[in-house]
Length: 112
Image (cartoon, rainbow, N blue to C red; front, side, top):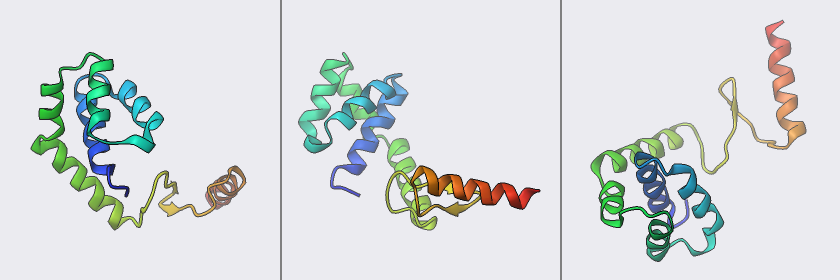
C-alpha cells in the first residue's frame, strides 16, 4: 500500500455515500502522483461536495471499519496489490489476456 492508500479509500467510500463515487474515483486515478490533503479539498470543490460533511464521512467509524475489514480480508487472501484476480478461488499470477484465458479454459475443461 502506498502512503495515501487508506486516505484514498476513505475518500472513495465517503464519496460513494454521497452519490459521487465514480466522479471522485476518476479524479483520484488521474492524480495518483499528487495524492495529499489538498487533493481532497480540490476534488470536493470541483464536485461541489460539502467539505465538512465529506471529511466527517471519511473519518466515520463505519468507513474506517470497512477499510480495516477489507485490509484484513486482503491479507488473509494473499492479496498484496491491485488488481488481483481470482478464478474459482485460485489467485492468477499471469494477468495477461493469454494467462487469464488459459486458466478459464482449464477450469472449464474440469467442468465437462
